[in-house]
Image (cartoon, helix red, strand yellow):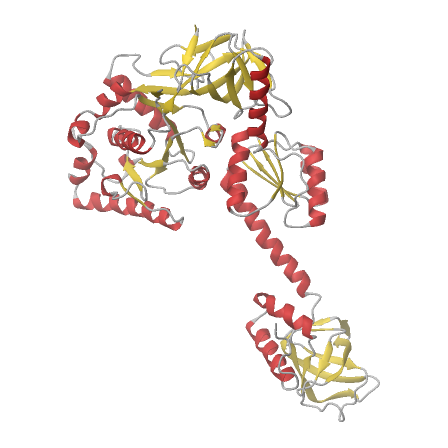
Amino acid sequence: MATRKVLVTIVGHVDHGKTSLLDKIRHSAVAAGEAGAITQAIGVSIIPIDIIQKICGKLLDLSGKKLTVPGLLTIDTPGHAAFVSLRKRGGSLADIAILVVDINEGFRPQTLESIEILRAHKVPFVIAANKVDLVPNWKWNQRDFLLDAINNLDYSIQGEFEKRMYNLVGQFQEITLQAERFDRVQDYTKQLAIVPVSAFTGQGIPELLMVLMGLAQKYLEARLQIEVKGKAKGTILEVTEEKGLGTTMNTIIYDGHLLVNDTIVIGGLDQPIVTKVRALLEPAELAEMRDKKSAFRNVKEVFAATGVKIVAPGIEKAIAGMPLRAVENKPEEIDRLKEEIQRDIGEVLILESDAVGVVLKADTLGGLEALKVILGEKQIPIASASLGTVTKRDISQVESLRDKDEFYGVLLGFNIIVPAEIIEYCTAKNIKLIVHNVIYQVIEEYERYTTELKKMIELRELSTLVRPCKFLLLKGYVFRQNNPAIVGVEIEIGRLRSGDPLMDQQGRRLTVVKSMKEGQETITIAEQGKQLALAMDNVTIGRQVQEGDFLYTDIPEEHFKKLKALKRHLTKIEVAVLKEVAEIKRKENPVWGVG
């Protein structure tokens, strides 16, 4: 057994400085040692422990800490979506994360998304409060450590800085997380550490690395134990076409070691891919990973934890986020591993299900898993979860689910493509698609949609009920005494509809509204404040009812119970009339409308 490097991923909102911070750490590493001391393998940057010690310098002496883990391996794949591709069985591939937040701007949508995903996968993280150099009148002395620099600032500048710091602390509190500046943290198991940094000047980077290494050493050492000579375990970061090589896989190997000619099993949508490693390629030192012109060098083997480009036949259908395992070239071992890997994938994919829930689509297995975990925490059921472009079959399933339950007849998509003809069909059929490249926004829009849908359904139900209404029979406006009685009325409270049953102030059922006229126009609904002519059968003005009487809608008991549940859609005075009706009814039946 040996201890591997700490696998770190950098997440946060676009433009908050993730790439700049990583670049600055790289440049700091190069400045601290000889050229080539930092190695860039595929998709990752490897920073050995001696370089971290040089960056941290006297901070280490002051802290009295001895760094024992062998260094950092930072994820260097573009875009926030890369993080959710970093998965292994049982959670995230990343050991720890750096959440980059612009100290001047605070939380943005992808900040919240990153936090949701980190929480979902239980990944510990440190907050890099970036762009402190943009705090008005900020000064920086390269010789000072971060805390000394802050303490040497003018009182007014310190005030501006503290104000931004505590806005950030407050934003974490709003989402039930406790955060504090790293030197003020009392318990790292309960509080998140915020390290002020500048990716532009490099200020705070030694402190950030110190906090990161300290946390990894104290809490993650067991996780970092690997079988150096064991069979490789890895995750696919990206599948790309390389000129002269064909389809290749950028892969992180997080356990064991991988050799040329090793047999590997890769998770697949329908079935696993079994192939042999033809070549292992690492870029030249300090080469930019995403530069297609970068020179690669062939290597015979690689050891965890590292990144490598794998060339192998038959990998055209490989997908980002899928697990990869090396295996002895024995049929029984290959079959065992194929079954194990597909079982792992089967825990994420839901292809055939009778459950009533939402339909999920994502571009990577990790993205799908993150979406599933967050929906699970919110107790939102899932009918199916699959990868790739939205198909007609997906939409048929959504339509079928909508017939069963309107709330779940929805497709939620993360970072996927929806063909134009499917968008057109869904628009015509009023089928709900919610697709974003930010998971947080997918969930937020779905919650907004269900809130609005619930309101619409309740209003639809409300429209079928007899609503509370109180109206006055106006004196001197009897147009006909009976057969039908026609009288001028004023709607005091609520609304009245044709067909509504009517009662008097003693709770006696009198009749129903036969028809209503406003001027010469026949109307079916009369709103509060309106004066109109009302026709009623089976009553005589001057006998059952008198001019100047107040009448009420005679609300059926079942309607009353439903109205109570929907009273948030009624006005305060409608609720008052509802209570009045109940009081009248309970004079005769004390338990009317109860329960």
